[in-house]
Image (cartoon, rainbow, N blue to C red):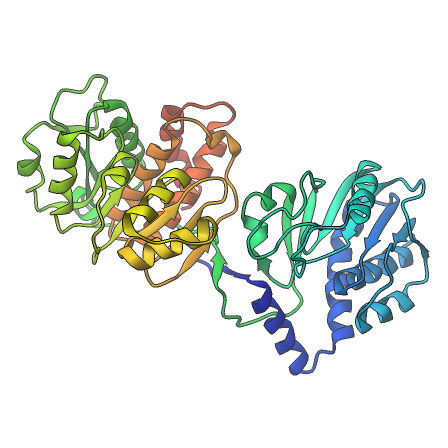
Length: 462
């Protein structure tokens, strides 16, 4: 798997920039590097059309002056709107180097492209009413919008919107490193496409990383079904969810998938083996490489007994859906993955007596307290290991917001786990396969169509 990109807190980004300065890159040179790198993207998107650059008082505004001067030098009709004078030395120097027009208000300015350099990652309080009105007015008058580093009005570390109804952008250019807001809701929904501008940040110790596209391998030349992994999916009161998970799992890499059921299931795929023996006996198969329980399990006494029997097994484990609501506080020491949505994550935190700030904080606290690997799914999926390792993901298609897609994700993750991967790696690969399957399935797909799309999705990672 290729290296993942660091995702930095504000303090970590400041430390990374200071390291560059200490190594001999001056503040002005660093601003020129960032601004010129961003200007390349702005210039391409402008395609010769008029550009307005909104500059604030800090170094984000300084980047804007650099961008504007690059565009002006290339013959673009560019205007800087600067409602506040620059207050940092580097921003003042960048303004002095800009030879184009500067105005303090929106006036009647219209253009093809607005570049938001009002405030960057250091913002912690809402925009004032006059600055918000200016930003909104300019956004309405321009056909496309680019945010430099972060959209103004966004809190970098949490992804919170400091002002309601912020303009949406077509492109956000992260300077130097990703910030948590780039991949965290609700802020991430305002950013459009996201691109990273390299300013020389290297070897940074990060709180988290952005997951990189994995490479999957075909089975080994001497593989057979058990060597590739036997996954047992424990069925429950509602058969459909378990079947969905098992169907997805059959395309996720495991060599053999069994459905452990205490009753007959209609419409079972011909390739899926159904074991209707008593669960304790079925779980005695020593060839089982991983277990999945939760989809369609139910929450009655029988469901609790089935969950208890699974938890007594010493094999890698995926817990999803109903199993998460029945789980009691305990310490896990083996490879065990939970895949909660936000409501289930909150319930698990209550069960284990932990709390945290936002989805990421809750997932990290739960993983540390329980020994579980936590895949907190949703439009801003977060993956956390018990040792604190945290991975963020680019969003998948919003069509995934339909019933049953979580069962498909659990099946893929369990299938990857059965192949011998760690819970963390299995979950990470499952997210990529899940997103790619959704792209293949197209618009308005059903969960069963998504499960069938896992096969061609897998082929794209070989």
